[in-house]
Amino acid sequence: METRLTEIAPDVYQLTTHLADVDFSLNQYLVSGTEPLLFHTGLRGIFPLVSYAVSRVVPVDQLRWIAFGHVEADECGSMNEWLRVAPHSTVVQGRIGCGVSIADLADRSPRPLADGEVLDIGGHRMRWIDTPHVPHAWEAGLLYDETTRTLFCGDLFGRAGAYPAATTDDIVAPAITTDEVFRASSLAPNSGATIRSLAELEVDTLALMHGPAFTGDCRAALLDLADDFDRRVAGELASPTGPAV
Ligand SMILES: [Fe+2]
Ligand SMILES: [Fe+2]
Image (cartoon, rainbow, N blue to C red; front, side):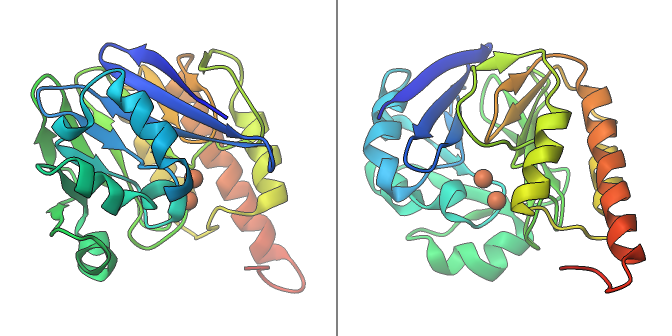
């Protein structure tokens, strides 16, 4: 098992590990500004692989910010390992996540970010966006790099298996097929609207957590995904047995 390293936008690196036993892949993203930021830590079990991949770009002890979308093992499992090897690093996440979970789970105090707040890491302006329950979890949020117009969209558009580092092929159909199997997304009444609001950003690259970086028509992809969430929410509400979840 190894972690593939690919620069998907200027100074934005995708780190991909394929877990062969479950045929599932995880991405982390390293944004190597003056104050390097890692979005998603990866599982504790792949920390040696991921930290080695990071070290090919920046010394791991120079990492300054550790960010993730929500509290889950692939998002933040190795958070404390990173805090240990990068002594000047700080976890950043939304106010809900920091207040409810991370202030207790993390070995050092996190820095909460308000919805829309920009973290300037020197060379990249990273905007935190609250997306409660999208794709899942109360504390969910995403990061948008205003500088490279990259939206780090976490589990949105997720798929199983291996994939290339980047693509312009359709990412919506594989995401719908996958979510109909795994049912990982919260089908909240406002899920579609939340995704649709992301389409208002100027996005050149969608940086997926479980899929390739997408450099096609990002606005259309987000709008199509939003429509599918609306379709599935409506379907659940119309079900004679009521919503399944
Ligand atoms: Fe997740
Ligand atoms: Fe994930």
